[in-house]
Image (cartoon, rainbow, N blue to C red; front, top):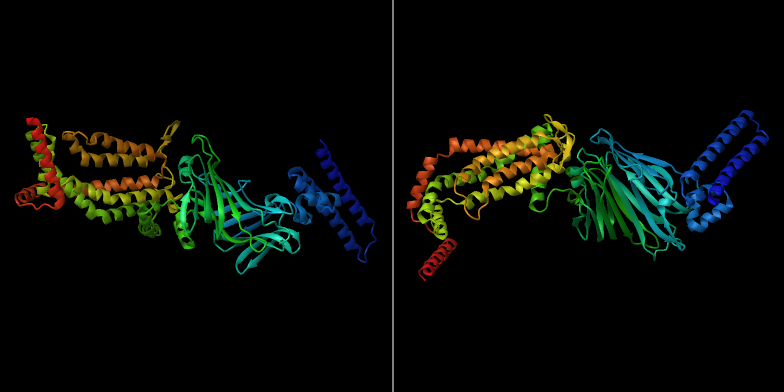
Length: 629
Protein backbone atom coordinates (compact mmCIF):
# COMPACT_ATOMS: atom_id res chain seq x y z
CA UNK A 1 0.00 0.00 0.00
CA UNK A 2 2.94 2.31 0.78
CA UNK A 3 4.35 1.69 -2.67
CA UNK A 4 1.04 2.62 -4.29
CA UNK A 5 0.88 5.84 -2.29
CA UNK A 6 4.45 6.61 -3.29
CA UNK A 7 3.56 6.19 -6.95
CA UNK A 8 0.52 8.47 -6.68
CA UNK A 9 2.49 11.07 -4.78
CA UNK A 10 5.24 10.95 -7.40
CA UNK A 11 2.69 11.50 -10.14
CA UNK A 12 1.23 14.46 -8.25
CA UNK A 13 4.77 15.78 -7.79
CA UNK A 14 5.37 15.62 -11.54
CA UNK A 15 2.18 17.54 -12.20
CA UNK A 16 3.13 20.18 -9.62
CA UNK A 17 6.64 20.53 -11.01
CA UNK A 18 5.20 20.87 -14.49
CA UNK A 19 2.80 23.54 -13.24
CA UNK A 20 5.58 25.47 -11.53
CA UNK A 21 7.70 25.40 -14.68
CA UNK A 22 4.78 26.71 -16.72
CA UNK A 23 4.13 29.46 -14.16
CA UNK A 24 7.81 30.47 -14.14
CA UNK A 25 7.88 30.68 -17.92
CA UNK A 26 4.69 32.76 -17.83
CA UNK A 27 6.10 35.21 -15.26
CA UNK A 28 9.39 35.75 -17.12
CA UNK A 29 9.80 39.13 -18.81
CA UNK A 30 9.11 39.01 -22.53
CA UNK A 31 11.92 39.13 -25.06
CA UNK A 32 12.20 41.79 -27.69
CA UNK A 33 10.05 39.67 -29.98
CA UNK A 34 6.78 39.24 -28.08
CA UNK A 35 5.32 36.87 -30.63
CA UNK A 36 8.22 34.46 -30.30
CA UNK A 37 8.01 34.58 -26.52
CA UNK A 38 4.33 33.70 -26.58
CA UNK A 39 5.02 30.80 -28.96
CA UNK A 40 7.85 29.51 -26.76
CA UNK A 41 5.60 29.67 -23.72
CA UNK A 42 2.88 27.65 -25.42
CA UNK A 43 5.32 24.99 -26.65
CA UNK A 44 6.92 24.68 -23.20
CA UNK A 45 3.55 24.19 -21.55
CA UNK A 46 2.57 21.55 -24.13
CA UNK A 47 5.84 19.64 -23.73
CA UNK A 48 5.56 19.75 -19.97
CA UNK A 49 2.06 18.30 -20.12
CA UNK A 50 3.14 15.55 -22.54
CA UNK A 51 6.11 14.68 -20.32
CA UNK A 52 3.86 14.41 -17.28
CA UNK A 53 1.43 12.13 -19.09
CA UNK A 54 4.21 9.88 -20.42
CA UNK A 55 5.91 9.64 -17.05
CA UNK A 56 2.59 8.70 -15.47
CA UNK A 57 2.11 5.96 -18.06
CA UNK A 58 5.61 4.64 -17.35
CA UNK A 59 4.89 4.46 -13.65
CA UNK A 60 1.82 2.38 -14.40
CA UNK A 61 3.53 -0.16 -16.69
CA UNK A 62 7.21 -0.47 -15.72
CA UNK A 63 8.92 -2.26 -12.84
CA UNK A 64 10.52 -0.56 -9.81
CA UNK A 65 13.83 0.18 -11.51
CA UNK A 66 12.08 1.68 -14.52
CA UNK A 67 9.90 3.85 -12.29
CA UNK A 68 12.96 5.18 -10.52
CA UNK A 69 14.57 5.96 -13.88
CA UNK A 70 11.54 8.04 -14.79
CA UNK A 71 11.82 9.91 -11.50
CA UNK A 72 15.55 10.44 -12.03
CA UNK A 73 14.74 11.78 -15.45
CA UNK A 74 12.90 14.65 -13.70
CA UNK A 75 16.12 15.42 -11.76
CA UNK A 76 14.77 14.12 -8.43
CA UNK A 77 18.03 13.76 -6.49
CA UNK A 78 16.59 11.35 -3.91
CA UNK A 79 15.21 9.01 -6.58
CA UNK A 80 18.48 9.18 -8.49
CA UNK A 81 20.39 8.09 -5.39
CA UNK A 82 18.04 5.15 -4.95
CA UNK A 83 18.53 4.27 -8.59
CA UNK A 84 22.30 4.52 -8.21
CA UNK A 85 22.14 2.13 -5.29
CA UNK A 86 20.42 -0.37 -7.56
CA UNK A 87 22.36 0.15 -10.79
CA UNK A 88 25.61 1.78 -9.77
CA UNK A 89 27.25 3.67 -12.63
CA UNK A 90 24.52 2.53 -15.05
CA UNK A 91 22.03 4.77 -13.20
CA UNK A 92 23.26 7.44 -15.60
CA UNK A 93 21.28 5.74 -18.38
CA UNK A 94 18.10 6.48 -16.43
CA UNK A 95 18.70 10.21 -16.51
CA UNK A 96 18.75 10.45 -20.31
CA UNK A 97 15.77 11.45 -22.49
CA UNK A 98 15.88 7.92 -24.02
CA UNK A 99 14.92 6.38 -20.65
CA UNK A 100 11.39 5.63 -21.77
CA UNK A 101 9.56 2.92 -23.65
CA UNK A 102 10.09 3.66 -27.30
CA UNK A 103 11.19 1.82 -30.43
CA UNK A 104 13.36 2.65 -33.43
CA UNK A 105 12.51 1.29 -36.89
CA UNK A 106 15.17 -0.27 -39.09
CA UNK A 107 13.98 -1.59 -42.45
CA UNK A 108 14.91 -2.42 -46.02
CA UNK A 109 13.00 -3.83 -49.00
CA UNK A 110 12.41 -7.27 -47.41
CA UNK A 111 12.68 -6.85 -43.65
CA UNK A 112 11.03 -4.60 -41.05
CA UNK A 113 12.58 -4.37 -37.58
CA UNK A 114 11.67 -2.51 -34.42
CA UNK A 115 14.27 -2.19 -31.66
CA UNK A 116 13.23 -1.14 -28.17
CA UNK A 117 15.00 1.40 -25.96
CA UNK A 118 14.32 -0.89 -23.02
CA UNK A 119 16.74 -3.79 -23.42
CA UNK A 120 18.07 -2.61 -26.78
CA UNK A 121 16.84 -5.77 -28.55
CA UNK A 122 14.51 -6.48 -31.47
CA UNK A 123 10.85 -6.50 -30.44
CA UNK A 124 9.42 -6.96 -33.93
CA UNK A 125 10.83 -8.71 -36.99
CA UNK A 126 8.42 -8.84 -39.93
CA UNK A 127 9.02 -10.21 -43.41
CA UNK A 128 7.53 -7.83 -45.95
CA UNK A 129 7.07 -10.25 -48.85
CA UNK A 130 5.57 -13.26 -47.06
CA UNK A 131 2.25 -14.06 -45.40
CA UNK A 132 0.93 -16.87 -43.21
CA UNK A 133 -1.63 -19.48 -44.29
CA UNK A 134 -4.40 -17.08 -43.24
CA UNK A 135 -2.93 -14.11 -45.18
CA UNK A 136 -1.38 -12.31 -42.20
CA UNK A 137 2.15 -10.86 -42.38
CA UNK A 138 4.85 -13.30 -41.29
CA UNK A 139 6.27 -11.94 -38.04
CA UNK A 140 9.05 -13.98 -36.44
CA UNK A 141 9.14 -11.58 -33.48
CA UNK A 142 6.21 -9.60 -32.08
CA UNK A 143 4.17 -9.06 -28.94
CA UNK A 144 6.97 -10.04 -26.56
CA UNK A 145 7.70 -13.54 -27.88
CA UNK A 146 11.46 -12.89 -27.92
CA UNK A 147 14.14 -11.33 -25.74
CA UNK A 148 17.90 -10.82 -25.84
CA UNK A 149 19.45 -10.15 -22.45
CA UNK A 150 23.05 -9.47 -21.48
CA UNK A 151 23.63 -10.51 -17.87
CA UNK A 152 26.78 -9.15 -16.21
CA UNK A 153 28.29 -8.10 -12.89
CA UNK A 154 29.07 -4.47 -12.18
CA UNK A 155 30.24 -2.94 -8.91
CA UNK A 156 28.98 -5.91 -6.84
CA UNK A 157 25.63 -5.91 -8.65
CA UNK A 158 24.13 -8.45 -11.06
CA UNK A 159 22.49 -6.49 -13.89
CA UNK A 160 20.31 -7.45 -16.85
CA UNK A 161 20.18 -5.25 -19.92
CA UNK A 162 16.56 -6.21 -20.58
CA UNK A 163 15.59 -3.99 -17.58
CA UNK A 164 17.71 -1.00 -18.62
CA UNK A 165 17.36 1.77 -21.17
CA UNK A 166 19.60 2.20 -24.22
CA UNK A 167 20.10 5.41 -26.15
CA UNK A 168 19.41 4.98 -29.90
CA UNK A 169 21.38 6.72 -32.65
CA UNK A 170 20.74 6.14 -36.35
CA UNK A 171 23.22 6.68 -39.17
CA UNK A 172 24.26 5.21 -42.53
CA UNK A 173 27.27 3.28 -43.76
CA UNK A 174 27.13 3.65 -47.52
CA UNK A 175 23.78 2.11 -48.51
CA UNK A 176 23.52 0.32 -45.17
CA UNK A 177 21.31 1.58 -42.36
CA UNK A 178 22.92 1.59 -38.92
CA UNK A 179 21.36 1.72 -35.46
CA UNK A 180 23.56 2.11 -32.40
CA UNK A 181 21.94 1.30 -29.04
CA UNK A 182 24.11 2.42 -26.10
CA UNK A 183 23.67 1.61 -22.42
CA UNK A 184 25.68 4.41 -20.84
CA UNK A 185 27.48 5.07 -17.60
CA UNK A 186 28.71 8.42 -18.99
CA UNK A 187 28.82 10.11 -22.37
CA UNK A 188 31.89 8.13 -23.46
CA UNK A 189 31.47 4.88 -21.49
CA UNK A 190 28.82 2.35 -22.53
CA UNK A 191 27.73 -1.09 -23.70
CA UNK A 192 26.72 -0.91 -27.36
CA UNK A 193 24.42 -3.07 -29.48
CA UNK A 194 25.10 -2.14 -33.10
CA UNK A 195 22.68 -3.18 -35.86
CA UNK A 196 23.61 -2.72 -39.54
CA UNK A 197 20.98 -3.62 -42.17
CA UNK A 198 22.01 -4.09 -45.79
CA UNK A 199 19.71 -3.44 -48.78
CA UNK A 200 17.53 -6.40 -49.84
CA UNK A 201 19.08 -8.69 -47.21
CA UNK A 202 17.58 -10.80 -44.44
CA UNK A 203 20.99 -10.98 -42.79
CA UNK A 204 22.15 -8.01 -40.70
CA UNK A 205 25.42 -7.25 -38.95
CA UNK A 206 25.16 -7.23 -35.17
CA UNK A 207 27.79 -6.57 -32.53
CA UNK A 208 28.00 -6.35 -28.74
CA UNK A 209 30.86 -4.23 -27.44
CA UNK A 210 31.83 -2.20 -24.41
CA UNK A 211 33.83 1.01 -24.21
CA UNK A 212 35.39 2.75 -21.21
CA UNK A 213 33.97 0.27 -18.68
CA UNK A 214 37.24 -1.31 -17.51
CA UNK A 215 36.62 -0.33 -13.92
CA UNK A 216 32.87 -0.88 -14.05
CA UNK A 217 32.42 -4.35 -15.53
CA UNK A 218 33.49 -7.22 -13.30
CA UNK A 219 35.09 -9.53 -15.87
CA UNK A 220 36.03 -12.12 -13.23
CA UNK A 221 32.35 -13.09 -13.02
CA UNK A 222 30.54 -14.94 -15.86
CA UNK A 223 28.78 -12.84 -18.50
CA UNK A 224 25.92 -14.36 -20.45
CA UNK A 225 23.99 -13.39 -23.56
CA UNK A 226 20.59 -15.03 -23.17
CA UNK A 227 18.39 -15.36 -26.29
CA UNK A 228 14.78 -16.57 -25.96
CA UNK A 229 12.14 -17.03 -28.63
CA UNK A 230 8.70 -18.63 -28.90
CA UNK A 231 8.04 -19.66 -32.49
CA UNK A 232 4.77 -18.53 -34.01
CA UNK A 233 2.58 -20.86 -36.03
CA UNK A 234 2.58 -19.93 -39.73
CA UNK A 235 1.17 -22.99 -41.54
CA UNK A 236 -2.22 -24.64 -41.95
CA UNK A 237 -1.21 -27.93 -40.30
CA UNK A 238 0.28 -27.24 -36.88
CA UNK A 239 1.44 -30.86 -36.56
CA UNK A 240 3.21 -30.87 -39.92
CA UNK A 241 4.86 -27.49 -39.30
CA UNK A 242 5.96 -28.49 -35.81
CA UNK A 243 7.58 -31.67 -37.14
CA UNK A 244 10.08 -29.53 -39.07
CA UNK A 245 10.48 -26.87 -36.36
CA UNK A 246 13.77 -27.56 -34.58
CA UNK A 247 16.74 -25.89 -32.94
CA UNK A 248 19.92 -26.61 -34.93
CA UNK A 249 23.47 -25.38 -34.34
CA UNK A 250 27.14 -25.61 -35.32
CA UNK A 251 29.86 -26.24 -32.75
CA UNK A 252 33.46 -27.45 -32.27
CA UNK A 253 34.92 -26.85 -35.70
CA UNK A 254 31.94 -27.42 -38.02
CA UNK A 255 30.10 -30.18 -36.17
CA UNK A 256 26.32 -29.95 -36.44
CA UNK A 257 23.53 -31.15 -34.21
CA UNK A 258 19.91 -30.46 -33.31
CA UNK A 259 17.57 -30.77 -30.37
CA UNK A 260 14.60 -33.11 -30.32
CA UNK A 261 11.47 -31.86 -32.15
CA UNK A 262 9.19 -33.26 -29.43
CA UNK A 263 8.91 -32.87 -25.67
CA UNK A 264 11.68 -31.04 -23.82
CA UNK A 265 15.34 -31.22 -24.68
CA UNK A 266 18.48 -29.54 -23.36
CA UNK A 267 22.12 -29.62 -24.42
CA UNK A 268 25.34 -27.93 -23.33
CA UNK A 269 27.82 -27.36 -26.18
CA UNK A 270 31.21 -25.68 -26.48
CA UNK A 271 32.65 -23.39 -29.17
CA UNK A 272 29.32 -22.67 -30.86
CA UNK A 273 29.51 -20.62 -34.08
CA UNK A 274 25.82 -20.37 -35.04
CA UNK A 275 22.36 -21.42 -33.96
CA UNK A 276 19.06 -21.53 -35.81
CA UNK A 277 15.67 -21.26 -34.12
CA UNK A 278 13.95 -22.83 -37.12
CA UNK A 279 10.19 -22.50 -37.59
CA UNK A 280 9.86 -24.86 -40.59
CA UNK A 281 9.89 -22.45 -43.55
CA UNK A 282 11.33 -19.51 -41.58
CA UNK A 283 14.46 -19.14 -39.49
CA UNK A 284 15.87 -16.89 -36.78
CA UNK A 285 19.66 -17.24 -36.79
CA UNK A 286 22.46 -15.88 -34.65
CA UNK A 287 26.03 -16.26 -35.99
CA UNK A 288 29.29 -15.21 -34.39
CA UNK A 289 32.82 -14.64 -35.70
CA UNK A 290 34.23 -15.48 -32.25
CA UNK A 291 32.80 -18.85 -31.10
CA UNK A 292 30.82 -18.76 -27.90
CA UNK A 293 32.82 -20.62 -25.27
CA UNK A 294 29.76 -22.46 -24.00
CA UNK A 295 26.05 -22.42 -24.83
CA UNK A 296 23.17 -24.00 -22.92
CA UNK A 297 20.46 -24.85 -25.46
CA UNK A 298 16.86 -25.66 -24.63
CA UNK A 299 13.75 -26.52 -26.62
CA UNK A 300 10.21 -27.12 -25.37
CA UNK A 301 7.41 -28.39 -27.60
CA UNK A 302 4.36 -26.19 -27.00
CA UNK A 303 1.95 -28.14 -29.23
CA UNK A 304 -0.04 -30.49 -27.04
CA UNK A 305 -3.01 -31.23 -29.27
CA UNK A 306 -3.34 -30.69 -33.03
CA UNK A 307 -7.06 -30.06 -32.59
CA UNK A 308 -6.36 -26.94 -30.51
CA UNK A 309 -5.76 -23.70 -32.43
CA UNK A 310 -2.24 -23.28 -31.09
CA UNK A 311 -0.45 -19.92 -31.37
CA UNK A 312 3.11 -21.11 -30.68
CA UNK A 313 5.08 -24.18 -31.78
CA UNK A 314 8.32 -24.26 -29.75
CA UNK A 315 9.99 -22.35 -26.93
CA UNK A 316 13.69 -21.96 -27.73
CA UNK A 317 16.52 -20.80 -25.51
CA UNK A 318 20.27 -20.26 -25.87
CA UNK A 319 22.34 -18.97 -22.95
CA UNK A 320 25.78 -18.02 -24.30
CA UNK A 321 28.85 -17.65 -22.07
CA UNK A 322 30.89 -14.63 -23.21
CA UNK A 323 34.64 -14.25 -22.75
CA UNK A 324 35.92 -10.76 -21.81
CA UNK A 325 38.68 -9.08 -23.77
CA UNK A 326 40.89 -6.33 -22.31
CA UNK A 327 38.54 -5.64 -19.44
CA UNK A 328 35.46 -5.48 -21.68
CA UNK A 329 33.48 -7.46 -24.23
CA UNK A 330 33.66 -7.48 -28.03
CA UNK A 331 31.68 -9.83 -30.26
CA UNK A 332 31.00 -9.36 -33.97
CA UNK A 333 27.93 -11.33 -35.00
CA UNK A 334 25.16 -11.59 -37.55
CA UNK A 335 21.42 -12.00 -37.23
CA UNK A 336 19.13 -13.54 -39.82
CA UNK A 337 15.35 -13.29 -39.95
CA UNK A 338 13.99 -14.79 -43.14
CA UNK A 339 13.03 -17.86 -45.20
CA UNK A 340 14.53 -21.29 -44.58
CA UNK A 341 15.64 -21.36 -48.20
CA UNK A 342 18.60 -23.44 -49.38
CA UNK A 343 19.57 -21.02 -52.14
CA UNK A 344 19.71 -18.09 -49.69
CA UNK A 345 21.59 -20.10 -47.07
CA UNK A 346 24.03 -21.44 -49.65
CA UNK A 347 24.83 -17.92 -50.88
CA UNK A 348 25.75 -16.85 -47.35
CA UNK A 349 28.04 -19.86 -46.89
CA UNK A 350 29.17 -20.71 -43.33
CA UNK A 351 27.58 -24.19 -43.62
CA UNK A 352 24.09 -22.74 -43.18
CA UNK A 353 22.70 -25.47 -45.46
CA UNK A 354 23.18 -27.74 -42.41
CA UNK A 355 20.41 -25.71 -40.74
CA UNK A 356 17.93 -27.31 -43.16
CA UNK A 357 16.42 -30.83 -42.97
CA UNK A 358 17.82 -32.10 -46.29
CA UNK A 359 18.83 -35.54 -45.01
CA UNK A 360 22.18 -36.88 -43.86
CA UNK A 361 25.06 -38.33 -45.85
CA UNK A 362 24.34 -39.34 -49.43
CA UNK A 363 20.69 -38.22 -49.15
CA UNK A 364 21.70 -34.65 -48.41
CA UNK A 365 24.29 -34.71 -51.21
CA UNK A 366 21.67 -35.86 -53.74
CA UNK A 367 19.41 -33.00 -52.65
CA UNK A 368 22.15 -30.35 -52.68
CA UNK A 369 23.81 -31.26 -55.96
CA UNK A 370 21.00 -32.80 -58.04
CA UNK A 371 17.42 -32.29 -56.82
CA UNK A 372 17.59 -28.66 -55.62
CA UNK A 373 19.49 -27.28 -58.66
CA UNK A 374 17.26 -29.24 -61.06
CA UNK A 375 14.02 -28.14 -59.42
CA UNK A 376 15.30 -24.57 -59.16
CA UNK A 377 15.96 -24.58 -62.90
CA UNK A 378 12.52 -26.01 -63.74
CA UNK A 379 10.57 -23.78 -61.36
CA UNK A 380 12.35 -20.77 -62.85
CA UNK A 381 10.15 -20.92 -65.95
CA UNK A 382 7.40 -23.43 -65.07
CA UNK A 383 4.55 -23.36 -62.53
CA UNK A 384 5.46 -25.29 -59.38
CA UNK A 385 3.06 -28.21 -60.06
CA UNK A 386 4.32 -28.67 -63.63
CA UNK A 387 7.90 -28.40 -62.35
CA UNK A 388 7.24 -31.30 -59.95
CA UNK A 389 5.88 -33.44 -62.80
CA UNK A 390 8.85 -32.61 -65.04
CA UNK A 391 11.25 -33.31 -62.17
CA UNK A 392 9.64 -36.71 -61.69
CA UNK A 393 9.90 -37.54 -65.41
CA UNK A 394 13.59 -36.57 -65.51
CA UNK A 395 14.38 -38.65 -62.44
CA UNK A 396 12.56 -41.63 -63.96
CA UNK A 397 14.61 -41.24 -67.15
CA UNK A 398 17.79 -41.02 -65.09
CA UNK A 399 16.91 -44.25 -63.28
CA UNK A 400 15.49 -46.04 -66.34
CA UNK A 401 18.57 -48.31 -66.94
CA UNK A 402 18.41 -49.52 -63.35
CA UNK A 403 14.64 -49.99 -63.51
CA UNK A 404 14.88 -51.89 -66.81
CA UNK A 405 17.17 -54.45 -65.18
CA UNK A 406 14.70 -54.76 -62.34
CA UNK A 407 11.77 -55.39 -64.70
CA UNK A 408 13.82 -57.88 -66.79
CA UNK A 409 14.74 -59.81 -63.65
CA UNK A 410 11.06 -59.88 -62.61
CA UNK A 411 10.11 -61.19 -66.08
CA UNK A 412 12.68 -63.98 -65.85
CA UNK A 413 11.44 -64.98 -62.40
CA UNK A 414 7.89 -65.07 -63.73
CA UNK A 415 8.94 -67.34 -66.64
CA UNK A 416 10.79 -69.69 -64.28
CA UNK A 417 7.85 -69.96 -61.88
CA UNK A 418 6.34 -73.11 -63.52
CA UNK A 419 9.68 -74.94 -63.30
CA UNK A 420 10.13 -73.84 -59.68
CA UNK A 421 6.66 -75.26 -58.94
CA UNK A 422 7.74 -78.57 -60.50
CA UNK A 423 10.78 -78.66 -58.21
CA UNK A 424 8.55 -78.08 -55.17
CA UNK A 425 6.20 -80.85 -56.21
CA UNK A 426 9.09 -83.22 -56.94
CA UNK A 427 10.86 -82.82 -53.58
CA UNK A 428 7.80 -82.30 -51.36
CA UNK A 429 8.80 -81.41 -47.81
CA UNK A 430 12.54 -81.50 -48.45
CA UNK A 431 13.03 -77.75 -48.13
CA UNK A 432 16.81 -77.99 -48.33
CA UNK A 433 16.67 -79.82 -51.64
CA UNK A 434 14.02 -77.43 -53.00
CA UNK A 435 16.24 -74.46 -52.17
CA UNK A 436 19.29 -76.14 -53.66
CA UNK A 437 17.59 -77.04 -56.93
CA UNK A 438 15.92 -73.65 -57.19
CA UNK A 439 19.26 -71.90 -56.85
CA UNK A 440 20.72 -74.13 -59.55
CA UNK A 441 17.84 -73.32 -61.89
CA UNK A 442 18.08 -69.58 -61.27
CA UNK A 443 21.86 -69.63 -61.65
CA UNK A 444 21.67 -71.53 -64.93
CA UNK A 445 19.01 -69.15 -66.27
CA UNK A 446 20.83 -66.02 -65.13
CA UNK A 447 17.87 -65.04 -62.98
CA UNK A 448 17.78 -64.32 -59.26
CA UNK A 449 15.54 -62.49 -56.80
CA UNK A 450 18.62 -60.55 -55.72
CA UNK A 451 19.00 -59.17 -59.23
CA UNK A 452 15.53 -57.70 -58.88
CA UNK A 453 16.13 -56.36 -55.38
CA UNK A 454 19.49 -54.73 -56.09
CA UNK A 455 18.15 -52.16 -58.61
CA UNK A 456 15.37 -51.32 -56.17
CA UNK A 457 17.96 -50.74 -53.41
CA UNK A 458 19.97 -48.48 -55.72
CA UNK A 459 16.89 -46.27 -56.16
CA UNK A 460 16.23 -45.89 -52.43
CA UNK A 461 18.70 -43.00 -51.85
CA UNK A 462 16.94 -40.96 -54.55
CA UNK A 463 13.48 -41.73 -53.17
CA UNK A 464 14.49 -40.82 -49.62
CA UNK A 465 16.23 -37.64 -50.79
CA UNK A 466 13.00 -36.57 -52.49
CA UNK A 467 11.06 -37.45 -49.34
CA UNK A 468 13.20 -34.96 -47.40
CA UNK A 469 13.31 -32.39 -50.21
CA UNK A 470 9.60 -31.65 -50.66
CA UNK A 471 8.79 -30.78 -47.01
CA UNK A 472 11.70 -28.29 -46.97
CA UNK A 473 11.23 -26.80 -50.47
CA UNK A 474 10.48 -23.13 -49.80
CA UNK A 475 9.70 -22.58 -53.50
CA UNK A 476 6.54 -24.70 -53.07
CA UNK A 477 5.16 -22.50 -50.31
CA UNK A 478 1.79 -20.95 -51.27
CA UNK A 479 2.12 -22.19 -54.87
CA UNK A 480 -1.17 -23.62 -56.19
CA UNK A 481 -1.80 -26.48 -58.63
CA UNK A 482 -5.16 -27.88 -59.73
CA UNK A 483 -7.28 -28.10 -56.55
CA UNK A 484 -4.34 -27.63 -54.17
CA UNK A 485 -4.03 -24.07 -52.85
CA UNK A 486 -0.57 -24.62 -51.38
CA UNK A 487 1.79 -27.37 -52.54
CA UNK A 488 3.79 -27.06 -49.32
CA UNK A 489 0.71 -28.06 -47.29
CA UNK A 490 -2.10 -30.59 -47.62
CA UNK A 491 -4.86 -30.14 -50.18
CA UNK A 492 -8.50 -30.24 -49.07
CA UNK A 493 -11.46 -31.53 -51.10
CA UNK A 494 -13.74 -32.14 -48.10
CA UNK A 495 -13.89 -31.12 -44.45
CA UNK A 496 -14.94 -33.70 -41.86
CA UNK A 497 -17.21 -32.77 -38.94
CA UNK A 498 -14.90 -34.70 -36.59
CA UNK A 499 -11.20 -35.44 -36.13
CA UNK A 500 -9.76 -38.88 -36.93
CA UNK A 501 -6.53 -39.76 -35.09
CA UNK A 502 -3.50 -39.77 -37.42
CA UNK A 503 -5.73 -38.77 -40.35
CA UNK A 504 -7.13 -35.36 -39.43
CA UNK A 505 -10.38 -33.49 -39.98
CA UNK A 506 -10.18 -33.22 -43.77
CA UNK A 507 -9.86 -35.32 -46.92
CA UNK A 508 -6.93 -34.76 -49.27
CA UNK A 509 -7.29 -35.98 -52.84
CA UNK A 510 -3.64 -36.26 -53.91
CA UNK A 511 -2.84 -38.95 -51.28
CA UNK A 512 -5.95 -40.91 -52.36
CA UNK A 513 -4.87 -40.88 -56.01
CA UNK A 514 -1.29 -41.77 -55.05
CA UNK A 515 -2.57 -44.68 -52.92
CA UNK A 516 -4.61 -46.03 -55.84
CA UNK A 517 -1.57 -45.78 -58.12
CA UNK A 518 0.60 -47.63 -55.58
CA UNK A 519 -2.04 -50.35 -55.23
CA UNK A 520 -2.16 -50.88 -59.02
CA UNK A 521 1.62 -50.98 -59.22
CA UNK A 522 1.86 -53.56 -56.43
CA UNK A 523 -0.84 -55.65 -58.06
CA UNK A 524 1.26 -55.72 -61.21
CA UNK A 525 4.46 -56.65 -59.37
CA UNK A 526 3.30 -58.78 -56.43
CA UNK A 527 -0.19 -59.92 -57.45
CA UNK A 528 1.19 -62.84 -59.40
CA UNK A 529 3.49 -63.81 -56.54
CA UNK A 530 0.46 -64.05 -54.25
CA UNK A 531 -0.97 -66.74 -56.51
CA UNK A 532 2.06 -68.87 -55.79
CA UNK A 533 2.35 -70.89 -52.61
CA UNK A 534 3.38 -68.74 -49.64
CA UNK A 535 6.78 -69.93 -48.43
CA UNK A 536 7.48 -70.22 -44.68
CA UNK A 537 9.52 -67.32 -43.39
CA UNK A 538 8.71 -65.12 -46.38
CA UNK A 539 6.73 -61.88 -45.93
CA UNK A 540 3.02 -61.99 -46.59
CA UNK A 541 2.85 -60.18 -49.93
CA UNK A 542 -0.90 -59.75 -49.76
CA UNK A 543 -0.56 -57.96 -46.43
CA UNK A 544 2.20 -55.71 -47.79
CA UNK A 545 0.17 -54.94 -50.90
CA UNK A 546 -2.70 -53.57 -48.82
CA UNK A 547 -0.55 -51.97 -46.10
CA UNK A 548 1.53 -49.70 -48.36
CA UNK A 549 -1.40 -47.85 -50.01
CA UNK A 550 -3.16 -47.58 -46.65
CA UNK A 551 -0.03 -46.11 -45.11
CA UNK A 552 0.16 -43.57 -47.95
CA UNK A 553 -3.52 -42.70 -47.60
CA UNK A 554 -3.36 -42.01 -43.84
CA UNK A 555 0.14 -40.70 -43.30
CA UNK A 556 0.24 -38.33 -46.28
CA UNK A 557 -3.17 -36.79 -45.62
CA UNK A 558 -1.41 -34.10 -43.56
CA UNK A 559 1.78 -33.95 -45.62
CA UNK A 560 2.70 -31.50 -48.36
CA UNK A 561 0.50 -32.05 -51.42
CA UNK A 562 3.62 -31.54 -53.56
CA UNK A 563 5.06 -34.77 -52.13
CA UNK A 564 1.84 -36.69 -52.85
CA UNK A 565 1.83 -35.23 -56.38
CA UNK A 566 5.34 -36.56 -56.88
CA UNK A 567 4.42 -40.08 -55.72
CA UNK A 568 1.28 -40.06 -57.87
CA UNK A 569 3.23 -38.99 -60.96
CA UNK A 570 6.08 -41.40 -60.22
CA UNK A 571 3.82 -44.43 -59.88
CA UNK A 572 1.79 -43.55 -62.96
CA UNK A 573 5.01 -43.32 -64.99
CA UNK A 574 6.22 -46.61 -63.49
CA UNK A 575 2.97 -48.35 -64.40
CA UNK A 576 3.23 -46.98 -67.95
CA UNK A 577 6.84 -48.13 -68.29
CA UNK A 578 5.97 -51.61 -67.05
CA UNK A 579 3.13 -51.92 -69.57
CA UNK A 580 5.37 -50.75 -72.42
CA UNK A 581 8.17 -53.13 -71.42
CA UNK A 582 5.79 -56.04 -71.00
CA UNK A 583 3.89 -55.52 -74.25
CA UNK A 584 6.47 -54.03 -76.60
CA UNK A 585 10.01 -54.60 -75.30
CA UNK A 586 10.22 -57.91 -73.45
CA UNK A 587 9.01 -60.95 -75.40
CA UNK A 588 8.48 -63.63 -72.76
CA UNK A 589 8.72 -66.44 -75.32
CA UNK A 590 12.10 -65.19 -76.51
CA UNK A 591 13.27 -64.71 -72.92
CA UNK A 592 12.11 -68.25 -72.13
CA UNK A 593 13.95 -69.69 -75.14
CA UNK A 594 17.08 -67.78 -74.15
CA UNK A 595 16.85 -69.13 -70.61
CA UNK A 596 16.52 -72.70 -71.84
CA UNK A 597 19.54 -72.25 -74.09
CA UNK A 598 21.52 -70.77 -71.25
CA UNK A 599 20.56 -73.63 -68.95
CA UNK A 600 22.15 -76.12 -71.38
CA UNK A 601 25.45 -74.27 -71.43
CA UNK A 602 28.06 -75.19 -68.83
CA UNK A 603 27.80 -72.72 -65.99
CA UNK A 604 30.95 -71.49 -64.32
CA UNK A 605 30.55 -70.91 -60.63
CA UNK A 606 32.49 -68.37 -58.65
CA UNK A 607 34.10 -69.22 -55.34
CA UNK A 608 31.11 -68.06 -53.31
CA UNK A 609 28.65 -70.09 -55.40
CA UNK A 610 30.85 -73.21 -55.16
CA UNK A 611 31.15 -72.79 -51.42
CA UNK A 612 27.39 -72.37 -51.02
CA UNK A 613 26.74 -75.45 -53.19
CA UNK A 614 29.21 -77.51 -51.15
CA UNK A 615 27.64 -76.40 -47.89
CA UNK A 616 24.15 -77.31 -49.10
CA UNK A 617 25.33 -80.72 -50.35
CA UNK A 618 26.99 -81.41 -47.01
CA UNK A 619 23.82 -80.38 -45.19
CA UNK A 620 21.79 -82.68 -47.45
CA UNK A 621 24.14 -85.61 -46.79
CA UNK A 622 23.99 -85.04 -43.05
CA UNK A 623 20.20 -84.98 -43.22
CA UNK A 624 20.17 -88.30 -45.11
CA UNK A 625 22.59 -89.84 -42.59
CA UNK A 626 20.38 -88.79 -39.70
CA UNK A 627 17.34 -90.38 -41.34
CA UNK A 628 19.21 -93.71 -41.75
CA UNK A 629 20.04 -93.71 -38.05
